[in-house]
Image 1 (cartoon, rainbow, N blue to C red):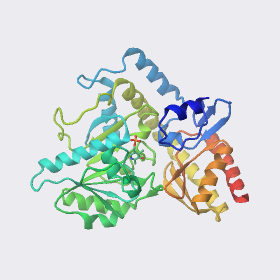
Image 2: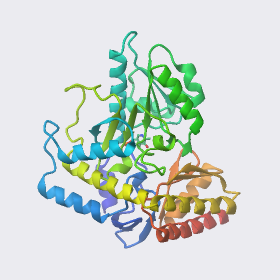
Image 3: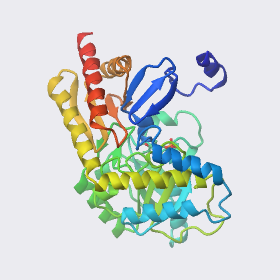
Image 4: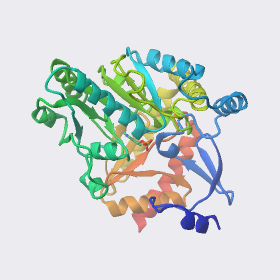
Length: 395
Ligand SMILES: *Cc1c(COP(=O)(O)O)cnc(C)c1O
């Protein structure tokens, strides 16, 4: 019934699975037939402290009963508190702008870079270099920033000034007098969960600093402890000029942030958002950060990501005819599968075993479990994955 309703009234922009989830708890979700699933996706890296997290839900309920929204023309206390917490935990000397999504955070990053290039001497600079296979969002300019030609088939004309490098090494040769910024993911999420090389990234950061070109790190997927540190930039030990955040910050409330060391780049009127950083979302996100900061400091996060990685490696050993290699960092993991057909079969077989997993790129089986996933939930998920692999092997 709801499937028909969905098909009749929702634009068909997603290849949808019509399971109807009604509730969740931790790394588990249930559908309307009471089937229980293990969630190794956390809604594409969003539900980082688990479904129906008690602390987050309570904070949301409490805030909703007081005030949800006023507008950015007034002080918003939880917004200020969240910004302080994010900046202090990051170790970077930055200020924040609150948006509602990853794409919007990246729009903000591009606007910051463009303004910097406008006001910072002659010639005016506007070009942003991104990487092939990157993903930066679905708005017209973040789509153009995305280095995948197949995503530029429609929707033109696009804004000018986006240049694509084959890889980190290729960036230097693309720089010209109009280049103002390089924007990269440290682990390409949609592109196949492939981490960049740390030494190469550090070298890039140094070269850009010398040439007064901004380094923007898209941490929409890697951010908020997904790779084991608050930001992947912390793990790579670099000092970016701009960081964007979204997915894992709100545990499902829509939030995006662009953070920058260019603390005075915007004047009133340069940028804005009606909903951005309202009471509800920033109160929820503040709670998420507190939970994850405690989890990290207690050693819980490191233990759970090591365990997850170890379990994945067992599959690499056991299924060399299906798996090429394991990729990823922290709890952003992938198994490179030998063919796209095998990958599709695996995802389907996993779903039949009531395990939610993702695809990335052409042939990567992707795992983004809640960061607070328990050992028991991890084991149950891998038991189901084992059955999915066995079924795939047999077919
Ligand atoms: C998901 C994602 C985006 C887009 O975020 P939305 O919230 O869907 O707009 C941008 N960059 C990266 C790296 C992402 O993973």
